[in-house]
Amino acid sequence: MHLVKRIEIIANSFELGKILDRLDKSGVNGHIVIRNVVGKGLRGRAEDLDMTMLDNVYILAFCAPEEIKPVVENLKPLLNKFGGTCYISDVMEISSVKCVASM
Image (cartoon, rainbow, N blue to C red; front, side, top):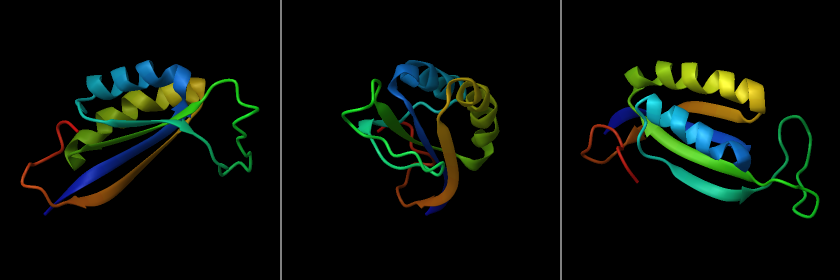
C-alpha cells in the first residue's frame, strides 16, 4: 500500500474537455467521468433534472502526492472562471502500481 492523492471535481459538463486537458497537462493521464450528476451543494442550491439546462459531471482521478501542485495550479483558474469545485484528499492505493496511470 502507498499514499496517493484523490482528485474529485464536480463541474458543468460544458467545461469537461477543458478540465480533462488541464489534468492531462498536469501529468494526470487517467480519470473516470460520471455524467448527469445532480445534488445539493454546500451553497444550498439543489439541482433539479427538469430545471437544469446543462448537466454536471463528476471527475475522479489519482496521482502521486508530489504531482499534486501542478494539478492545483492548472485547475484553480479554470474552476474560478467557469465554476465547479475540486476536492483533494489522501488515500491509500493497494495495487502494485506506483500511481494509477489509466482506468
